[in-house]
Image (cartoon, rainbow, N blue to C red; front, side, top):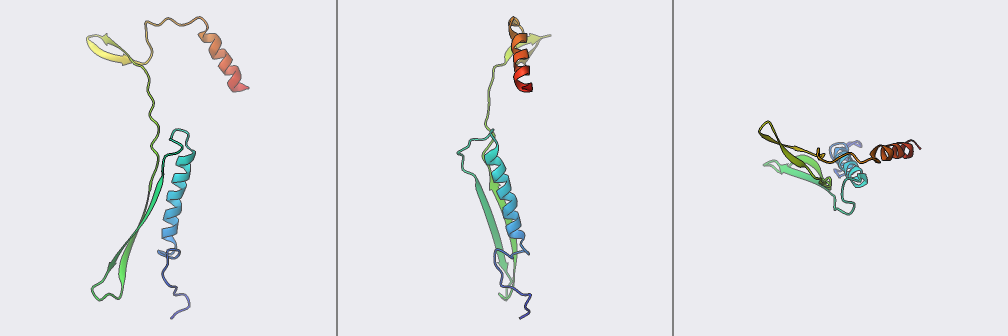
Length: 118
């Protein structure tokens, strides 16, 4: 046998393509774990599927490598919307137009600006 010929293994399958695909999906999982918009303790998965189809003579085979990840979904969030009719059509707004601006609203915004700008 040629010294460049190596026994097939996961490490050299597709000239390293199987490992490369796994690493791509692993990176997605790591980024999903770090994302604060996902549940920290949710299970993530990586599936590396290898399909093998031998020929009729059983002396070679075709293969297909697929890597997939199952990530934690982004957390949902909610709020309140206010309804009113506008020219006969019902519409929704997140802010209540009947709510008066509070006198300290601008003061609070300025304090947040100072905190954010440090």
